[in-house]
Length: 387
Ligand SMILES: *Cc1c(COP(=O)(O)O)cnc(C)c1O
Image (cartoon, rainbow, N blue to C red; front, side, top):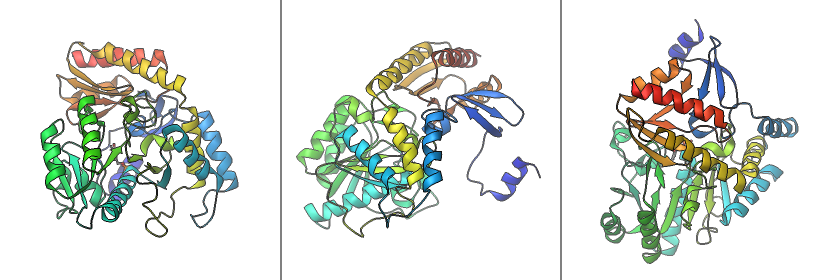
C-alpha cells in the first residue's frame, strides 16, 4: 500500500484531506512527494508562526530535547517557568496553566469559570454565555461552548451550562447575562472557524462592560487570533480590553502542541492544588519552542505583521470575483464568487495552499512570509478568483 492507501485504511475517517502528501518545507514554502513546491498560506492552521523548519525555533527545541524532553509536573523545569513569565510580562495577566491544545485550554477556562462562580457567587452560577458562530474546540464542554449546531449533532446531550446568543446583538447578550445565573461570557474577537468574522469594537467593549456590571468573567479565546496573528500579541490588545481569562494554543507552540490559559487578577487564585492538571502540560521541549516564539513577537515584528496584512487585504479588496475581504493582520477571510472548494483546488494547481472557513477562503500565512511571497500569493489568488 502506498501512503495515501495506508492512511485511508488505518486512520479514523474524520478528515477530508487535500490530495497532497507533504514531505518537507522551509519558511512559507512546502514540497510534496511529487517534488511540487507550494506557497503555504495556511501554516498548519495558524500553527507554524515562523513557517516550516525555522532555524531559531528548531534550535531552541532540539537544544532542549538533548537535555530533557519530558519530566511530568512532579518536578520544576526551567522552560515552562520562563515561558509563563514571558506571557505574564507581555500581557499583564497574573498566572498561566499549560496544557496541550486549544480545546483543552478552553476546558480549563470553563472549569476555572465554574469554580470562580461557585466561590464568588453561588453554586447555581455556572452558566457561560457564548456566541453563535463561535468555535471553541471538539471536546464535550468546548463543543457545548461552540455555537454551531452542525458540530453538535450526533453528540447529544451537550454539557449543560451554556447559553448561546447571536453575535453583535447587545440586547440579547444583556438578556442572557441577566436572565441566567452566569459566571462568564466567552468569545473570540474574530470568529475564525465561523468564517473570519470580526466582532465590532463597540460590541467587544459592551461585552466587557456588561461582564463588569454583572460581576461575571470575560473569557477571550485567542487560540486562532493570538501570537501576533492580528498585529497585536493577542487580538484583545487591539482594543485595550482586560479579559479575566485568555486561552491560547495553535501558534503558541510554533509547530508543537501546547495550550495555555492565562488568568488575570480576579481569577489568578481560582485553580488550587489538585483541581486541574495535565501529564504533558508544560512539557520542556514544547515550552522551549514556545519561548522562542514569544520572545520574537516584538512590537517591531507585530507592526510588520499589520503592514503585511494590510498589503494582502488591500491587494484582494475589490478584485474581480472577490465579494469581500474580512479579518485583521494576517488572519484574512476572502468571500469568493466561485465556490470556495473550486478556488482552493485551483489555487493548489497554481502552487498555493490555503484554508477555508464556512464559505470563505481563509488565509493564515506564517507571520514571517516575505513581501515577494505575499505579492505572488495575491496575484495567484486574484487570478483564480477571477476565473
Ligand atoms: C482551533 C481552535 C480551537 C481548538 O483548538 P484545538 O487545538 O484544535 O483543540 C479552539 N478555539 C479556537 C478559536 C480555534 O480556532
